[in-house]
Amino acid sequence: MSKSIVELKLNSDGIKELLKSDEIAAACKEQADAIASRAGDGYEVTTRQYPERIAYAVNAETKEARQDNLKNNTLLKALGT
Image (tube, rainbow, N blue to C red; front, side, top):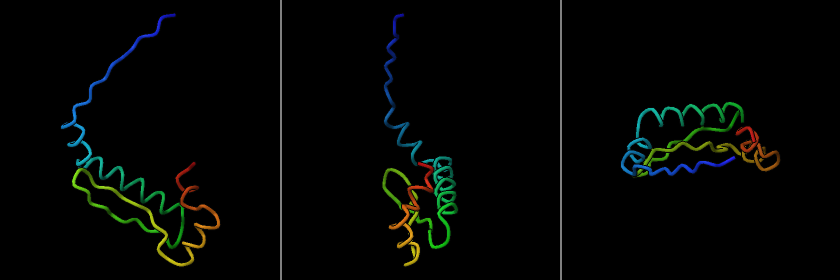
């Protein structure tokens, strides 16, 4: 069986535009909110602005959440991995 080789050439300007789009930002925010929800109390979503994109992070904001995350890897588990 012969294998086909597919070569892709990404459009850098198109990728940059996609990363800055409201749709991608909304999808990322939705995922971050879901992770924070699965992690539980004390975990919050923060927004990070970069020149090339917007990003969201889930942080352990309380002392209890930080201890929980250290002991149980809560954020890693909330990712589903």
